[in-house]
Length: 115
Image 1: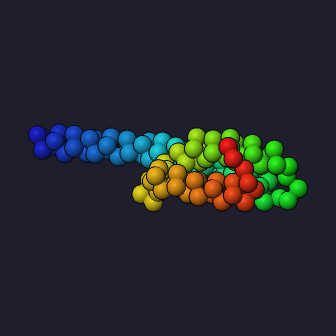
Image 2: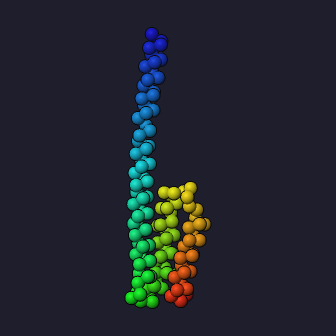
Image 3: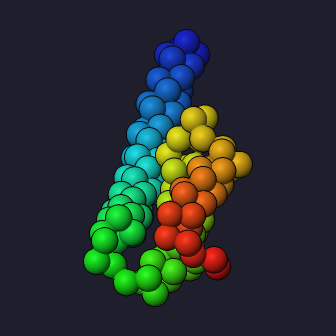
């Protein structure tokens, strides 16, 4: 009798434990999906900024606005945090900031812009 109660109790505990894990996996998956969507949106904005910078018809004032304000703000506030959440082992904040500085320096030198 004691054996039956023990086996039933262990079975119920194991079933309860199995039910909890999928909820956590679903929550984690939905969080990753939201972060991925945020990253994709930010990546499109940054791509748009780069397209504007490469367009020879873009006015100098627009380039200055993009290089001095819009691009760095989007990169630091949206793109970089999302990328670090999606790929924490592949990127570091320092590495991403160095890439931002490199891109900004290239375009600032190309168009002779001082912020």
